Length: 638
Ligand SMILES: Cc1cc2nc3c(=O)[nH]c(=O)nc-3n(C[C@H](O)[C@H](O)[C@H](O)COP(=O)(O)OP(=O)(O)OC[C@H]3O[C@@H](n4cnc5c(N)ncnc54)[C@H](O)[C@@H]3O)c2cc1C
Image (cartoon, rainbow, N blue to C red; front, side, top):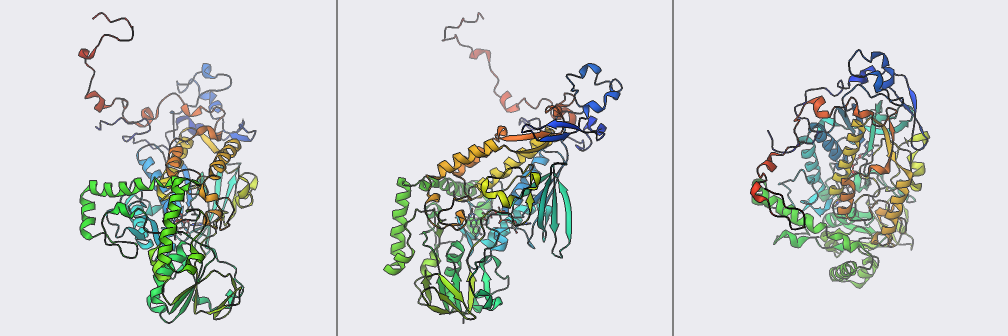
């Protein structure tokens, strides 16, 4: 037997089916009584306890005396877990991470019967890393940082991973941890409607043949991504350009061989966010010409944390791990851990740079300005591209290939806005016409966070309609990586894990404490938002610059981001503040879940002396350790 203390929720020996272990619950006859919700909302709670009075005495457990002020305990084991059905929309890193953590919690006995389905609209899962196949697409966090803490990978081929390698990693994770069978691809969530009557969500899911399935679930989790709704700008005349020659970076055809296809083409790249810069840097050597139509200045950095990688053979701002090193990582846990640890630890120092006017911010600004000036050389290019705004107001891209491409004679850059597109050219506002054979839209994503389908909570209110005014009334819905998460503070994955663990905690609470529904209280939400906005005002994300953090607007609030460090985000979510929630219970007494007084160990098996830690017993106290008190207490007469 393990010497580890097993908390009561761990019941590995359990053979009992939690669906049927509810005892008295089998006696619920559907009669309903009104239960008062703390906010005045009326909950229909099933008062099972008081419907089974006739059985008192017969089962020898509940007596007439146990009816106290109208409440009689439920004839069931304590902490009985109700089966729960959970639908997750989105099979990206978030959906995979959450499903995996739910499965692990179920395996450990913390959760009872749960039924999880992930609906993914694409033909494969992987999210961002499946959809973004454009040339040069890669993560701007080091590979050994952009991985789940529970799934370190020995075989990352490069320091910065390509989207293809991250997609492969996501598949290995989903396969190894049993998530893949839960993912239904080619399934788009078309609507999600909450019923106050049943406290459940009705989800409509459409498959690729347009057949619609309607599912009722207890919990709905949108994990639909922030950078997943393709944004195509309205450019006058774009519809006249040959359709097969217009591409969006996030819809790159699987079979397009740009190295040969672009050889005789004048290619226009519209947009200069991370995806634009990565695309330009990669296609420029293979295209007849590349015209860049940019709108904003941007900070480019050399490889971030490069010094932590040791001496390497850097090429184009990246390097390959050798086969020998990957074998070493696989064989030597210490080596793999140390490499990931050093990079991750360094990432967690970034937050001080995000404070406006801080020495770290000013130092970083001076450094990047110096490096960009040196790389760009040409005063005209410097004037066009090097920003005045704070570093990280827009996400900083480490993109050496772009800095090399911008000096090629075949590459040109204009900051003049596009006026119109014709069949074979683009004309800018100042009247300059550019002949182009292909247009690549590197115009990013709609980051307004508004769901693209009806998502209705209490009273039929649609989330899209009230998004900007601090929405409320969406019980039993928990978002993965929604607004206000840690997209700027290094890699998003540690925050994502904390987000998923928080939802597991919520599900465990709902399942074992007879909770019918829970939602954030308006008061907590308002106070939290005030605190966040107050801190955000002093962070560089609220400086004036166009960024996807703010839906592409220069002075909009950076809704995407958490106003604090990743470490704080993780600490906050690690201990759910249950007082921030308001609850409806299944029964009229919120302690109904204690049932007839037994613990989950007694109900489902497990170690009844779990609290005795064998490790501690290796070091028992000895009488010889006794000393005369030094604080004035009376010495024991031994
Ligand atoms: C080009 C690019 C580079 C990036 N680089 C970094 C980086 O360096 N570091 C970093 O931390 N983050 C980076 N990100 C952010 C990245 O999106 C996150 O790191 C992470 O992949 C988000 O995972 P997710 O599961 O939350 O969202 P996504 O990966 O976007 O997955 C969401 C999934 O939901 C699906 N979906 C959407 N709507 C529906 C619906 N109605 N029904 C069913 N399915 C639906 C989508 O098809 C998608 O598969 C980058 C993003 C992009 C686009």
